[in-house]
Length: 279
Ligand SMILES: [Fe+2]
Ligand SMILES: [Fe+2]
Figure 1: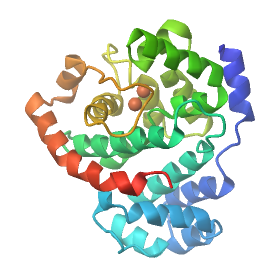
Figure 2 (figure 1 turned 135 degrees about the vertical axis):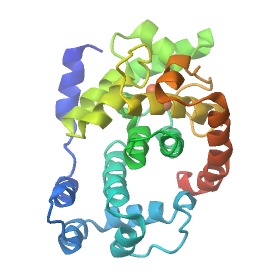
Figure 3 (figure 1 turned 60 degrees about the vertical axis):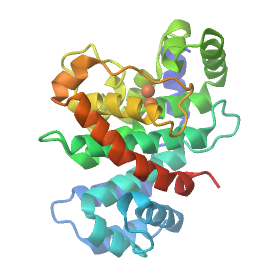
Figure 4 (figure 1 turned 180 degrees about the horizontal axis):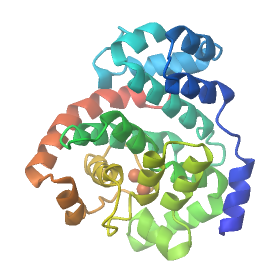
C-alpha cells in the first residue's frame, strides 16, 4: 500500500451520511434546539434505533429506560448523544465486513472496550473531556477497520506474519508495510472532518515516544493495552501491548490507579459483552 493508493481508496469511500453532518451542525449551533435535531435524525430511523440500543446498554446503567431520542437527550445529555450518533454512523460506514480478513464485529468490540476504559481513565485526569476520550477510544483503530475492508491482501500478510513470528499486529504491520493503521486512521478521520483532538489521538495512539502527544492519545494508548489485558474483543492479535511509563508520567497516573480502572471496567465489559456480540 502506498500513500497514493491509500488516498484513492479514501476518495472512493462514501462521505459521512448527510443526516450525521446535519446533526453535528445542529449540535454545534449556539442556538441549539432539540426539535431541529429530532427533525434531522428522525429521518434515519435505523440510526435512531441503533443509538437507543447503545443508550440502553449496561454501560450507561439505564437498561430499558431510554425509549426515544428525547429520553436519550434528557438522560444522557447533548455531548453523549452527539458522540453516540457520530460513533454509530462511523461504525455503520465501516461495518460492511464483506471479504474482511479480521472479524469486524470483534474489532468493534475491542473499540468499545477501549472506549469505555478511556472514558474511565479520563475521570482521573483534570481538564480532559470524558466524552471525547470515549470517542477517541471508540475510533482509535478505524484505520485497521478500514484496511481490513479495503487492503485485505496487506492485512492478510500482516496477520500471517504476526502469527508466524508470535508478535503483535502492530509490529508485523511496521515490518511489512510503510503506512500503519494509526496513520491511515488519522487520514480517514480528517477526511470525515472529525474534531482535531480526536484526529490527533487516532494518529498518535502508538506514537508514545512523542513528548507532545495529546492527552487523548496517551489515554487511548493506555486504554488499548488494558482492553487487551482484559481480553475484550480482538484487534488482530492476542498480545498485550506494554504501557510506556512516559505516558503514565505525562498523564500523572500510577499503577494503583490503573488497577482500580481495571477493577471498575471489568464488570462493565462483562455486562456489555453479550449486548455487543454481533447478531
Ligand atoms: Fe491501534
Ligand atoms: Fe487498539
